[in-house]
Length: 396
Image 1 (cartoon, one colour):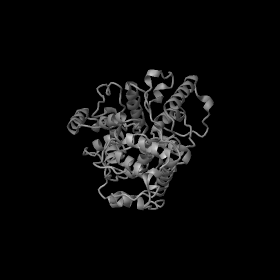
Image 2: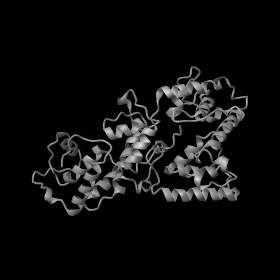
Image 3: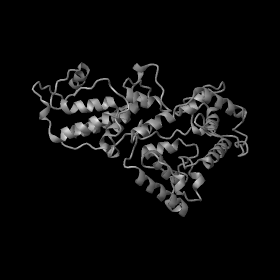
């Protein structure tokens, strides 16, 4: 299974496809793991003995397991590396020889181990239907054709273009991007790196990937990429163009990556199917670090600037995104709440009373809404009818 950097919910259909595509049959996965274990890679001495492409010929991937990812997991797992990718980590913890080591560093890998990882990674890249992050060493001397490109997330396409230069040791000013390459076993920073050393083909591949990024994406960051910003501060310029759905999920993603359990149906379903998500046993112990909290606050305030504009700015689909029904309900009633409406639903009333801007107005009447607010309400109601989760009753 390819983890990817998670999916953008541009429509209900895309959301549903992304959700169920990641559903794995535990019995089928266990069977695939047993099949993989028949290769006896756990007994192979990767530190001193070299793998050959012939040994890898029988490996493959399907919806239940990726043999190449598991094999890379074995090489690293022999040193106790703990993986964020649950598809690898869940396999490793089932192996009697695996001893997790939170202090693992790529520095412990021998040259032969690195060569073996190269053999695995390059063989894997050659089998890919599309160019994936980590594949660019295969494309150093050939141009990427159009049919080898898919729809990438913002981070994926950024990484692919940067990877061309990272292979030569370039260091990057964006901290999250530099951290990503620092974690690659093959990356070695070269302070003397000069872009002039790039070949004509490498330059064309960078230009092609950048063109694809401009064509596909209007935002600098996307849902599922907050793992890059757990120790790196977000800036407001990266938030331009994000929908209210994007901003909500990104905020919650910081908590989800610590194992928070969600009660709201839409947000809970979204994270329950993420490959990296695992509910923590001790919910009371979940705490964001200072940078994560700073990023959550930035996302929150940016989101609220958009919500506050609903009285003066017409809503578009690009603003809403495929929001969950529970969020749309709050957003719809928020239009009224900004005029001080008092709600019959005690939970809804309690929620708005917790907002600093809310001032109860017993004299509020619906006809006090302006035309933009009325039009925006219609758009929100239309969105609610096709939302991914439903409430039995909605007020307003």
